Image (cartoon, rainbow, N blue to C red):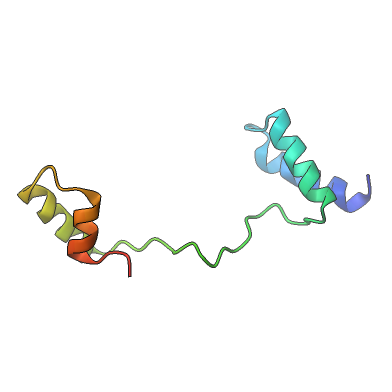
Length: 83
């Protein structure tokens, strides 16, 4: 094991010390062997950032008060949440 892989494992262990299982440590070890040098998540272009604005929250609450059985799809279509 070279020094950079060891460093990565130590950093991974520090980040996950209370939650790590054998499979988690094994996965991190394999990631380090494949060249990963950071324990932080990579930026994902396809994942939209969640945006909560009071107008949307109020509109959703209003729809739910009008119909307690309103579905997610109905809310989505009504408010055009996914743009």
